[in-house]
Length: 323
Image (cartoon, rainbow, N blue to C red; front, side, top):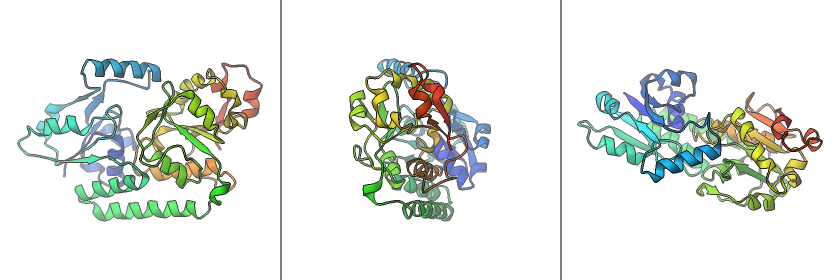
């Protein structure tokens, strides 16, 4: 079978199912596992967040959309020439990856019609369903079922150790800074499954722009910052913007040093590593109950005492590796 994956989460699912050798093409954002980088690139983003700030990404995206241009370049000639049996795409975010509409427009003119699998999970359960969906389409149904069963066991292992709901800290997660964004979709589920108390956003809700006053008024016990398309280096470049917001230093999470920057890949890619995201959050939310779950190099934590003695402008320098 010849498979084309146009989204990183789909590529990660395929490799986890043992189908890496059947992947014929990927997007330029597919970088995990390392072998994914050796595959032919069929889709490229016209916006590179690795070199642009969030504000700059926003401006470029708005300019492209205003002029009716697509943020992604899809190699239509490759699709027609290689004629994959299955194409994985998505229909959740036109900013993050090529969407289903662009793909189906190309496929409509092909002599041999591939199966277009549209992944659009809204909740953590939906993430598991996506894995099963890929398994069915790619003749790996039994392997997908085993993987999902293993992920469910790991969720139960976390759940069994959690304290009563009344003893769980208030948590909040930001997936965008300048503009402020909460990711919605499966993120509220992950916060809840890992033992956090978050009642502002319901599981499955859309991503949402925020006013700073909403974050300030919520005054969370723990603040998780896992910016979409951002590794820790980019998170550290972006986080100083928060320091300029009114009342930043007065937030409970800031005063207590409970601000965490997290590699986005455990949250913005709904696939096999989503369970690692749940376990990681469990350790950050309940460090007395969980340890050794956060992948090395995935998290840095604000040193509250050090930051309290620093003037504004030094926020990024006050984060330390966790644990």
